[in-house]
Image (cartoon, rainbow, N blue to C red; front, side, top):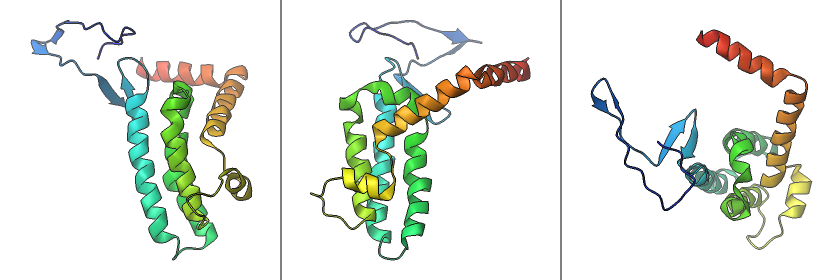
Length: 165
């Protein structure tokens, strides 16, 4: 995969390693994060939308059988964990790209509370003590900056480099 900022430009670069031609791809999956050639994060957001769509359907099925505490545990294990992972990089993709994630996240909250599809979600977020997608992004960036300020990120990177040597 070649990183390319120009959307209309195409490259024909042939890369061979030990006489094996490396195939050109538009995105790659690395540690569960889909990185596309333009760093727009649309592929990662699309795969996250698929996971959240499954969560919405699952919540509508199981909400009758579980208590509120059990629903909360399922929310944090199947919805929040997927949203939180790598939100620090793909959360800056823009409001348009993240709009569908917001809609699906709100559907999960409505399913948990037996709310109508027309109900406002701000009171649901407040009553359930759940963060909106943008708030999760801000929280993760804040945690990253805190760790960077106190030298924890640099120590982590140095330890990874030492392991590779």
